[in-house]
Length: 180
Length: 294
Image (cartoon, rainbow over all chains, first blue to last red; front, side, top):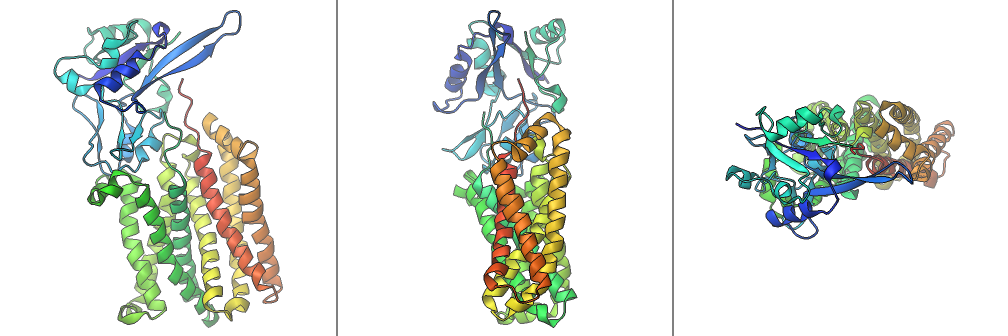
């Protein structure tokens, strides 16, 4: 079984939010719901000032705190290592939203359940690639199997030394970042 | 990216579950340890314990979304024993009936009360264990949350238990003053309880805040927000001065001037303790800061 992840080259990100719109479109989200974000960080000082854009989404942690605290077991990890929410058993207690150190979960008030990035798993199982990856005009994201040493993502991580965000939190994320 | 998913309903629950279980512990302590003059307080504590925890639990249910609109989903909530909420559901569903049975037994309410009186010692012992479990688990509930480093400390359940006992005693004393006006004089006997438990709570709160200042960057940020940041007027005003120091001083005088204290001051001190307990829960929830991730 593959173990899917995404590598993100934040030095290429121009902050256009295409990934967010593509995600909303793919997952049929309302305009006020989103599974990914772009945050910016100031770098340097005038005159050598720059802005770094960092695309954020669920890290699909191997040691997922959200899954540990879910009282109903609605949050589970699929066989491909993707952290998903079962909409039929979620009660909307929001404990997982408190537990996530990355704060990557949202509450869907219309359905009363907690939602999150699904790594477009339906699309991936049909042989596709997540919408945020394919839509990116500057190809910031690389999607693939972390267990396959010859996959583009594994080679990218090996070459650039990309790291997850805050690996010290101990949740073992599967989204890797190459930062400037 | 949302900052805090929990708000006033959860804060009210944390407070009411603490006060209710504390009132149960206070009632059992009075019934078992103190002489006859304390029976009014035992009765009052047993009467208020169940309803407080029930109202708190209703707050929890109102905070659910799909589980509120489709209540059958709540049966799933004991599905993961690694989750503190599952343990909470189990603890509450045992403690609430025990608290109601205890109220029936001490106040001789209907035939249930007469039946429960036969087993009152068993209800007291098992009930106390579950009262401690209720008060403690509300602390563990937020202490295991990875998303907020300020809460990740074993001192959290200790602080919640200490606050539960002092607010529970206050709730029981207010109800005793309402149901039995004559007890207002004997209430002074329990002022010593307030002196002891408010000191313990103050000490644990001090340890919690001071140790948070060095625990991690995020915990330090939250703690300094409480003692010198935007939340500091509420922390010092509502929790420390009005919630701990003023009722502590009033209780010392109440104990020394046995029975001479005006009724309004005796009940006023108890109301302040309750207000302080609620403010403490609110400030702990609102001061939680997630880790800096980028």
